[in-house]
Image (cartoon, rainbow, N blue to C red):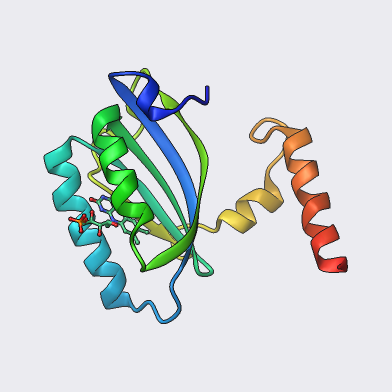
Length: 141
Ligand SMILES: Cc1cc2nc3c(=O)[nH]c(=O)nc-3n(C[C@H](O)[C@H](O)[C@H](O)COP(=O)(O)O)c2cc1C
């Protein structure tokens, strides 16, 4: 369920996608993760970060007040841009309770490949189909 993080107390989540800044190195990525993990521990946040083809996908979960705080910091970070919230809202149980920030990249698994292979059981078909059409139309302009 989508609802603004400021509209409720307690456990919540947000999911976003962004584009990494040009020239991001392995060392730069390690620094992002080190900061994320130490600060997330202090704020009671857990989650995961996936990096693929210059795009970040991040899920963060924890107290809604901590999420609001971290979302402001993340949005202002110039190591990425085009931060787009895909979903946010309250959460019953943590999905990544053992992870201050799980990291994955193409070596662990490809989101693009996963989408290409996914079927009705894993993806809402109408959203998926609309996405494919929008993508094809964008190539034709
Ligand atoms: C892709 C990406 C993901 C990030 N994830 C987190 C995170 O999960 N937790 C966190 O504290 N900071 C994360 N950061 C770093 C924050 O943007 C910010 O630099 C850090 O929290 C320090 O904030 P401050 O400068 O306001 O103290 C991330 C940055 C990027 C570019």
